[in-house]
Length: 182
Ligand SMILES: CC(C)(COP(=O)(O)OP(=O)(O)OC[C@H]1O[C@@H](n2cnc3c(N)ncnc32)[C@H](O)[C@@H]1OP(=O)(O)O)[C@@H](O)C(=O)NCCC(=O)NCCS
Image (cartoon, rainbow, N blue to C red; front, side, top):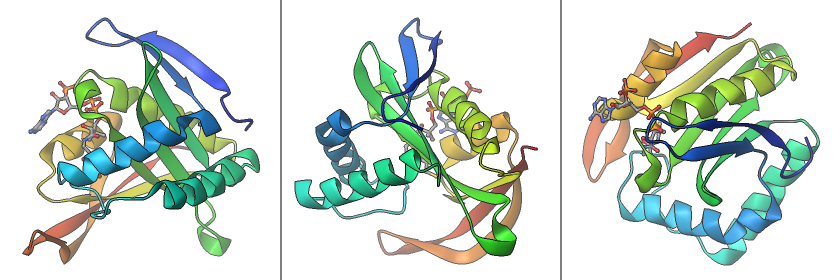
């Protein structure tokens, strides 16, 4: 998929116009600010260290290369022309190549408006082209909003890693959620 390709637009629950598209180089500074804001708020995501501009350049160039070569899909949400978040699904390999792993986060101001749900559905639509039939994801047991979002999109809890997360010194389980999309 070519960088910046527009997938579709819709109006969110709060009346804001949302465009879903592929990522592009111009997202670099927004993405850097985004990941560092997630780290700062201690969002229940895997990463807990701030990134530098150099590390983000490396990360984005790998992402754009993989998306361009159809090795993964990425859906960026833009709201009123501003970067609002991203969702990726990365297919696995070999006997697991019908499986893809999903990750998603939104900028704090844009949450709870139904945008995450639409991004996931769009990423699922896109990744079917790459032969993915089952999508999995991992979520912290205490991330109630994310679990609710995944359930409303059709994911079910199918696994649990006891003490799979160490969050600020405290253990909690990591939940595995899956959905058959094809
Ligand atoms: C999780 C996340 C990706 C969901 O995206 P989103 O755009 O907020 O999702 P939606 O608006 O489609 O759905 C959010 C739902 O959670 C509900 N919700 C909000 N807070 C909640 C809570 N504490 N407990 C349960 N549900 C909650 C909302 O009401 C909404 O449900 P509804 O549509 O039935 O009313 C986003 O909130 C986010 O980026 N969170 C921080 C980072 C993160 O946790 N990423 C996921 C890591 S696994």
